[in-house]
Image (tube, rainbow, N blue to C red; front, side, top):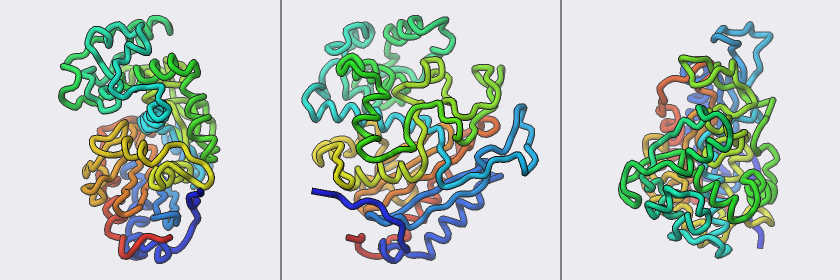
Amino acid sequence: MTSPRLRSGPPERAGLDPGQLRLLVDGVRALPGTWCAGAVAVAGRGPVVAVEEAAGWAVRYAAEGAELPEHRRVPMTLGTPFDLASLTKLFTAVAAVQQIERGTLGIDARIAAYAPELTAAADHGITVRHLLTHTSGLRPELPLYDCPDGPAMLAALRAEEPIAEPGGAYLYSDLNMLLLQQVLERLTRRRLDRLIREGVTRPLGMRATGFGPCPSAAATEDQRRPRAKLDRGMVRGVVHDENAYALGGVAGHAGLFSAARDLAVFCRTLLGGGAYGTARILGPDFVELLLRPPGLGFLVDQAWFMGELAGRGAAGHTGFTGTSLVLDRATDTFLVLLANTVHPVRRAPANGPRSAAATRLARAVTGPPPR
């Protein structure tokens, strides 16, 4: 059995109001220079892509934040790849749920049963579910990039004690997906990049998606101490996240690059119950497990970036570099908004543009979804 593939079409074919989508596009065009250097948005309903818009610059600044003359800038295009940052966590979560579906990984099993070298997790009874729902009690970050080498980084990660009782309150932590990566790689005897390529991106035809390096990607930050944690200069095509960079670019919490249309395929696959075209990456019951509240890897019904799409089971995530996606099964809609908000330097996160775009899409829903 096949699931419809994405195709471009007018808003009316998707049961969407063109006026609201024009406002969404106008909002994206206004983002460069205020929220980001450049942005790409792809939105639709059912199998119809009704919005594809690129604005601004993939590269606008040189080192030290100096603005490049226009003839040396790199324009943003619909195909520009982006450093996904924490959107990588969604792919790690899918890889984990694939193992749960196969019966090789237990969602409520202790992770030390699969990777006994995770000694602190063993001492505190941390489970796979704790990692996927950010209830492990681990602190948000650990400066692995300050360790002298790879073995020291892994030793620090394996010895890290939770700061709160596992199974208790939600505490977002990159360490959860780094530990989950350890479990998956030990369980399958394959690196995470191979798991995601063979289990997700290759079957779905997501040719623009993979771990770096990605030389054509939108630039991120000019990283220099003391403002940044590392001295790397203007970062482009290499993962922005310092821990992922120190770990070699393949990490459970960051490191993937992708383009907007590829991420629309990812959204459409989950909206289609795990299938896209003739490919299936998850069964419908396991998509339900992935996306139902509180979400496994995914955030659910978070109005701060989902706007008015939130409230009926919308799922998605944001990334520190300026990336985000949201899919809403209640309306069969999806929105991918990618921006390089940390170019040329990082600043306090602002989610107003994400929320506004999602609200425009929610208000555009006028009729039944297309067949």
